[in-house]
Length: 72
Length: 260
Image (cartoon, each protein chain N blue to C red):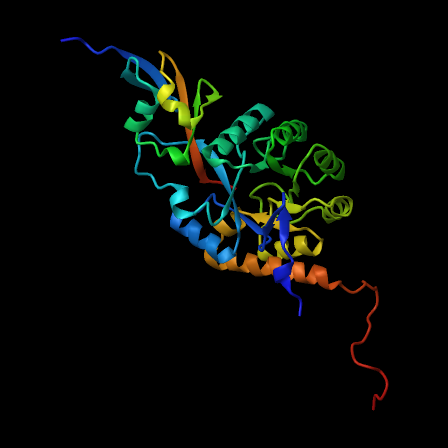
C-alpha cells in the first residue's frame, strides 16, 4: 500500500500535519470553518474565499483564519 | 414637541436613529452582550478581529448572537500598535463580508492607550484611498482632527479620557473647538464612566458617543445600557433646545411686582 505523504503547515499559529497536495478548501472543511463568517490569509496575503478550492498548500505555509469577536 | 425621529445621525451617507454606539467587549457572556445592546437601542456596534479558535469549534460566535443584518458591525483595530497591523486587520475585516465602514484605532502606549496619531493619520490616508469609510479614534487635538478630516476620515472620534478609564470628558474646550471646525460626525469615543458623561458630550454638540466598558462593567449592565440610551437622547435634546446664557448673579424666577 502506498504511504500518504504529509506536510506541515501552520494554522493560526499552530502546527498542523496535512496530506500533501491538499487544497485550502479541504483543510478548512476538515476544521469545520464557517466560511461566511471568516477571512483567510495565506502567507500574509488575503485569499478570495471563492477560489479556495484552487489553492494548493505547500510545506510551511502559514494560514490565518479570523472572525469577529466582542470588542470596544 | 421636538421630533427626534427626524434627527438622524448620518455617517458615510448611512442614516441611523440612535446616536449611541456600543462596544461588544468585556461582557460576561454573549447573551448578556446581546441583551445590553438591545436595551441600549444602539444600531452600530464595534467588534474586534481575532483568530478563530480552531481547537474549540463549539465556542459561541458573535454573529450567532448579534445579527449583522440588523445591527451594523463596525470592525475595529483594537490592539494594533502600528499602521501595518491596522491595515492588515481592516482588510481582513472587509473580507469577512464586505465591511467598508470601520473604526481605526492605532494605539501608541500599552499603559495609557493613547492613540499614535502619526500612525493613525498614515492609516487613514491609505484606507480612504482603498475605499474604506473610516471612523477614526483620535486624541482631542483640534489640529490633528483637522488633518484627519483632510486625509479622508468619515468621522472624528476623539477620546474623552483614556480607554476604559471611566474618567469622563477631560477637555471640553478642545471638543468644542473640534465641533466648531468640523461638519463631519463627531463622536466621543472612550473614557466615559456614567450616563451623565454621555449627556455632557451631546450637550457640547457631539453627534454621538461610543461606549463599551461603562456599560459592560457596570454592576447592572442592562440598567446602565438603558441609562446611556436615555442620557444620549437627553443630551441631544438639550443641545438642540438652546441653553440659557450663564450669568454670575441670581435672577429670580418669580416676578418681583406685586410682592405683598
